[in-house]
Length: 321
Image (cartoon, rainbow, N blue to C red; front, side, top):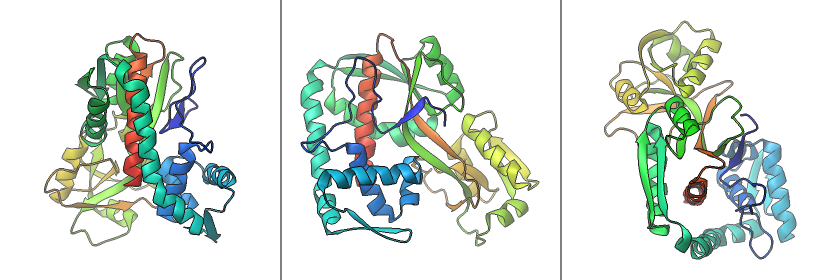
């Protein structure tokens, strides 16, 4: 990920503007608290790092900073396994309420000032998987904020956002350096998996790929290029049966036994009745980021930042659920 894709569930500092990372009366950073919760859920620094799109060292540093704030060890390590201490369990018990209180404070401070219209582009999986809960929350918090949704591919929406046709876009993170005029806030990282029919009994990804027709995620799509590159790197001469860009349609075809597919493990929902399961890829696992792209100094940048702030809060709460 390039240096412009710098944020994970937080608002990046901008010159002359306060950062929205909220700290409690102990100076607690909510990113550190969320990291602690994910480490506790996963039982592993490495697994938490993959979930957050960070290095294991960065996760360890966040935990160390949090433990220094509390003056207590919050986790105990036994090899690669990590478990909460008694103090850690006590913090975890109070954490959901603490974050809810912070959200209420933000609403009280900002809610009466936010109004206007925002044109948002979104790829299909963001429209169905991420945005519904974000839009529900933004509607409740900011009833005078009007949102107009524009569907499209990441490449199409990137161009529209750059040219001012839309104010923001929920797209796949670009794999190239952004122009200085653009900002990208990372919402979610999705690892790629092998999607197979539910009745597929084999467990070897390589054996399945070598023996099954392949439904290829469109190579013209930014995420599709990642899938195609991984397949090429395996050295397997895949039998491509179909190539398309709609992940929901791919799931339907796989469920009908028409092939297998390397796809991102996107934030649902899956098509109703699709009978599929997913297998983790064994080596050099690619991933795609999903987040919000917007111009830094446009007339409605402040509204895009508000939506991004709502998204960060909603996605954090979903992690804790």
